[in-house]
Length: 198
Image 1 (cartoon, one colour):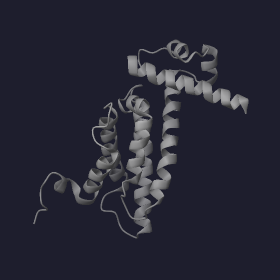
Image 2 (tube, rainbow, N blue to C red):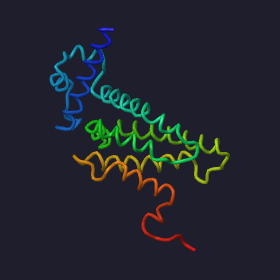
Image 3 (cartoon, rainbow, N blue to C red):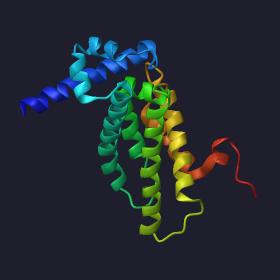
Image 4 (cartoon, rainbow, N blue to C red):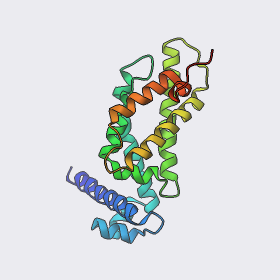
């Protein structure tokens, strides 16, 4: 038990050091020594947990995705039909709590690998959800679930990038969700101010 606590503490210190240093200097210029010095952790300890800084960043991103998934699952389970906005509200809340980590992931630091991990994981979950909703409601999708998921996740990633780069959110999360809900229900044509073509 005490060893587990020590491992978690070490990994948290390495995570915090990585995030802080990437924000200050960018990922490519960092060395393992920079990270261990900032974390006040011996290099040997670092290497007992991670092969290199890339593996640390990948682990930090996986942990972020696991936390996000844990928050999103209950919000997604609340509806059988469609977009309620609750998962997006949860994601924005998580992004605000973990703002610095989201910033470095969504900026594409680390050769873009963490961003690809984030996007792929979110697209996989979204596609599963879209397929499941279609099956539960006995409807045939008009657009391929994988394509639809990538469009949806691409929009979310872009909104998240914009949202977390501001020290204070440019608008309340609830307002973002309301607009995205309108977009999901009414479409881009309506969102840009046009009436539906007759």
